[in-house]
Image: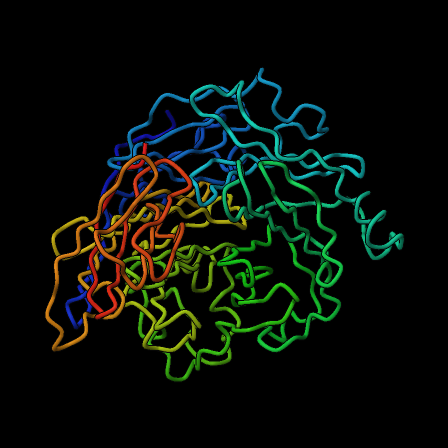
Length: 487
């Protein structure tokens, strides 16, 4: 179904970290690049970037929105096998949009729901958002069907010159559970606007963001001067990390950590180039080095497709981000993995993990300015380690799966000198409890995201079904973890 050959392995070597706490390996890779060259574009198949722009990962399956067949194409995370597609056409989804299925994208929320969005190309074309029921698409849930450009004119400014022409929203970022409560954030392509929907009880309501709907100055600290006067360009991506902060990736900028008032809190541009370990990494084979050779090329370090992916593994925060000069001569660029020291997400050389992937580059054939990444986490994959399964997709050029293995203690190590005690964790229905009161009970989903937390208690309710990891911290500093299933 679009692949000329079977999946192969990334030919690169990924050595463990010097401290032995982290390992990284490729499971399989389909690539347009030599020496694999096992990626073939077939018009109408989900390998064709003209028909598919995004991918999401859920429960060991990769989902691709096939705009030609109006279906969700699927692949096995385990080995790249093509699975049966899910037909979405004929169930009322995306009706009434002039572009119809022509420009659709996928995202997942914290509850694992798959959400289908569309951008709008015409002035009178609505944006839509649907929570897809993959078992029965006819029961999919409409979050909103809004004429965003007109709503901006009505609720924010009637100055059409400020609002601009068609309000194009390429990529959306849901936060929370879209069937319950949360929000959706997006940036307007080609303009300076951010838009938001607040979700309550599965109903999304447009929020004009009176205090933060438009960045009027593109020369804020942390922004590269070379593009300071530019707009957001095509496919800007936002990645909320909580209700207060989000990552913003746009127009070949170094990623920015921003608050909901539009302030830049942190930027990759702050990483001193002269001391960065990244300049030591490269590709010695055909196509030359992936990375710029000197400080003059600083801005090109993130001359890459938009998007990034943040996740938690055993209490530590990681992020995957495109890196390098994404040109055909340089192999199309690669991804780099960041491990933050703490929740402030300060970027230093010490936070850079010693791998870039794919080792042969992604390639740059008929490229799209957006790369999709999915992560599923198992904090207790083994007796002393956890894993993050990482899927990456760059339209027309490649898709593959990598595994990060962490042997690091969960968060902070147990308090020295304190005798360990047995902590029994019980579950019934959606209630989790311990025999005695503990300092904190925290529940994480398979994406490594915190679902719920409570302090000075012995019980907590999990507000959804699925597989979770429960972490109990005693008043003496001891930690117990247990995987639970809520049905």
